[in-house]
Image 1 (cartoon, rainbow, N blue to C red):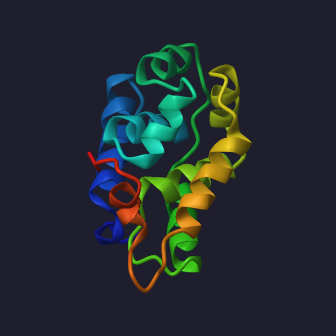
Image 2 (tube, rainbow, N blue to C red):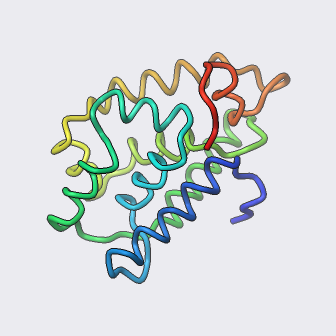
Image 3 (tube, rainbow, N blue to C red):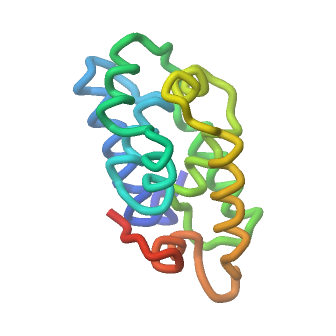
Length: 151
């Protein structure tokens, strides 16, 4: 997967996912580590998670309680396909989060335990993505469009 299409925040999220996995004694990052990375990266996706109480500290506590690993490469590939489908030039944390929310796996249980309203998150991300005109902006511009900063 070409990482040159990732926004700064998405690149940081993937890097943080790797670092978090290694810090927790895992060889490969899973979706739960990717969620931690998104929170760390800042931006719209991070903001939407944190508004629902999905914070780094709470997520880390749940991950330490034990979540089965699953590879993130298919998730990142699906996020790229979502960006292509929407004619976005770059893959942002918003694409990654929306893909995570629509992908079955142990991270869904994690979000449930943290009280995330997944349907509301999906709707809010979709509304923001729909506001982006492909000919004018790329998805990474959501942060500028909605007044937050990319990490």
